[in-house]
Every structure is written in C-alpha cells, then in structure tokens.
Amino acid sequence: MPGLIQGLVYMAAVKKKTTRKKAHYVRAKKRGVDGGTRARRTVSIVFLLLVVGAIGYGIFSGFKWIGYKLYAGNPRFEIQHLEISSNGKLKEDFIRETTGLREGMNLWELTFGEIEEKLLGVSQVESVRLERKLPHTLIVEVKERVAVARIEGVKKRGLPLRVDRYGYIMPPSIKSKDLPLIKGLDSELVMGEPVGVTDVDTALKIIGTCESSGYLRTYIRIETLDLKYSDFIDMRLHGDIRVRMPRFSLKPKLQNLATIIKIANGQGQRVKEVDLTLDSAKVPVTYY
Image 1 (spheres, rainbow, N blue to C red):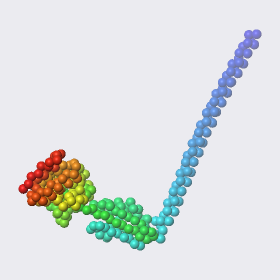
Image 2 (image 1 turned 180 degrees about the horizontal axis):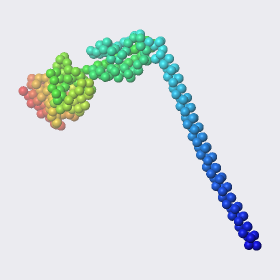
Image 3 (image 1 turned 180 degrees about the vertical axis):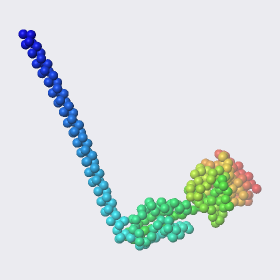
Image 4 (image 1 turned 120 degrees about the horizontal axis):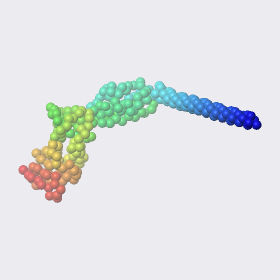
C-alpha cells in the first residue's frame, strides 16, 4: 500500500511539471508572433509613405514641367517690347542694367518679386509698377522719391542730405537749397534708410500739412525746423518769423498761425514771434 501511494504521488508530480512546461512554451511562441507582426506592419507603413511621397513628387514635377512649357519655356511669350519709364532722373539704361531685363527674354523668366526687389534696393526708388501685356510686352514704371526737406544729423556736411515724405534719406543736391531744413538731431543719417525718429516724422507732417493747403502755403513759408528743444519745435519762417510749434494738434495750430500772419499783414504789421504751445484762445504774439 505505501508503495502504491508513492507511485500515485510521483505520477501527479510528473504530470504537473509537464503541464507547466507546455504553458510556458505557448506563451513564448505567442510573443514571437506579435513581434513579427509589428515589424511587418512598420515596414508596410514606411513603404506606403515612400510610395505616396514619390507619387506626390511626380505630380508636382509634372505640373512644374507643364507650367514651364506653357509659360517660361514657351517662345510665344518672348519679350519684344520692353516699356520702361520713370518720373525722375533714373535712365532707362540704368533700370535695364539693375533688373537684368532685355528684349528676347521670356515674360516669365523673372518674377515680379525679383524685379521689384532689385529696383527697391535703389535708394531713389519709392515704388514700382509692373505689368505683362501678352504676348510680347512688359511694362516697368518706376516712381522715384521726391525730397520735401533737407536734413542734418550729428555729422554736418557741406550740403545737407535730403529726406522724402516717408522719412527716407536721399543724396544731397544743390538744387534743393530752397527746401525747409530739419536740424537739431542727435543721431546719424544713413543714405537709403528711414530716419526712424519720431520728431522727424512730426516735422515732415508739419511740412506736408502746409504743402497740402493753398491757404497755409500762402502764409507759412517754412525755412527751418529745429528739433533740439523737448517742449516745442523751433520753427523759423520766411520774413524772420519765429514760431514755438507744439508736437500735437498740428493742423489747427498751423491754421491759427496762418490767420495771425494774414491779419498782421492786413494791418501793416510784421510778426516777430508766435507761441502756439499754450492751450488758450489768445495766442501770445510779438511784432517788429
């Protein structure tokens, strides 16, 4: 009997051990299958992305080739008439050389952006208008900057530089000696660059306001605008008139000034000094 019991125990132990090994084997086999599936899936996705990318590139290249054949590579759009004009001193030869444009080129060989970038790099150029007239004509219109004042920076020159209405610095010119002079700046001026000073913008607004009105232009003839004072602009007019000009309410202040000078002229008086910085109905005025 004891021998029989021992035999049964031994057989149970062997059976239990065998079952564990089989379960372990199945789990290991399952993990191997999952890893292979993931690898194949990754390869498939990468391959699909490559195929999609190749198709997309092919479509893009195809459209680009078609566009080239229809436009930039089409001899039908060869430039036969190149119409170049400027409202200033820039010559046609200079504009041709700057842009690289010439007859025989294709209308689409250079983009408008490329042409504009080359021309706007010239300090005298304010704006550019381009137009294609199919099939053979390209129109280039250049608008040059117009100086509205002379300007002095920290470094004094024999001839002051000039400035346009947008505050861009232009080369000096002896023909501009009658333009108003903006002075009193504590910064350097760079040719072709905007001044970037708020007081200069204010001075240009004063000049522009006077030039835009026949009434103001008749009685206010600006000679200098000195910006060195913090609480007012020292404005000198033709006839040796000094004006303390504020940096605010420019148009009404200038209209008031023109009226003062007009009344004085009508009464046979010469205005010497006007203080427009006070916010009062009665403006301090002195006469010669």
